Length: 296
Image (cartoon, rainbow, N blue to C red; front, side, top):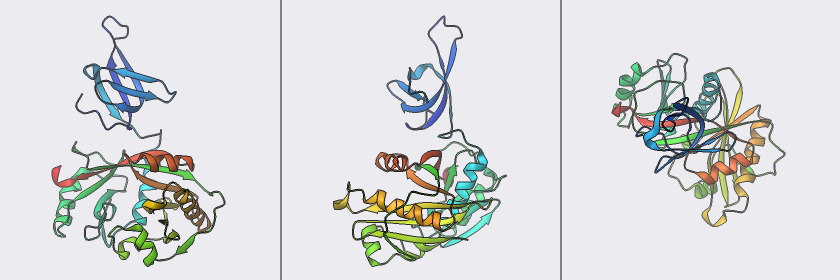
C-alpha cells in the first residue's frame, strides 16, 4: 500500500484476513515497524502483527500516545515561542517565522490557534516568497488538515513532567559564548539562538565536551514549559554521559524558573537521542512534519 507512513509511526491499520475468515477484516493499533516486504505492526502489548501489503485496506496515522489536541497545541505553542525566529507575524492563527534561512524551526509557519486551516496557505507562500525563503510548514499531528504531500523532515515531540532530579552543576550563560559556539559547530547566528518570546533562555556547557540550549516559555493556557534544543556533544567526547548530565542540568534550570513540564523535539530517525530522552523519563507525545507549502 503506497500511503503507509514511515516506520516508527503509530497507526491504526485495517487488513483482510484469510479467505473464509469471520469477520473478513481485522484492525491493529500500534507502531509500524516495516512496510515491505511484509507490513509489521507492534502493538502496545508487544505483539507483532504481520500483514501482506496487498491485504492492507486502510491505514490511519495516530499520535504516538492517546492525547488531546489541546495537549499538542500547548506544547507546540510553548515551542514556537521558544524558537520564534528573527521576524514573525501572526496570520489567521498561524505563527510565521523567518530567520534568513537558518534552521527549519526558525523559518516555518506553525498552526497554533483552534480554527486554523489550509485556506491560509497561499498567503503563507507569499509571505515567505517576499523574503526569498522556502515556505516551510511545521505541521503537528491533528492541529490542521492539509492536502497530502511529501514530508521533508519528521520530528518526534517527547514530553515529561518536572521537577527534574537533582543535577550536577554545569556552566550556564544567558548567551552562547565562543566556547559554546565552538562545540555547537552549526552556522546559526547568535540572534537566532537567543530569540525567545515571553520567556527566558539559557545556554549550558560542559567544558569543551557538550553544549545545549533551554528555554522556558508559556503554553496557550499559561503553563510554563522548558524546551531542550541545540544539544551537541563533541565527536571525540561521546559515550561518556555528557549529554545526560547536560540535559539534567538544563531541566533543573527550567524547574527552578517555574516550568512544570518539559519537551524536546527529536528527528524521527535519531534512535540514539530518542533512547537517551526515554531513559530520562520522556515519552513520545506526537509528531511534527515539515512540508513545503509551495507543493500543496
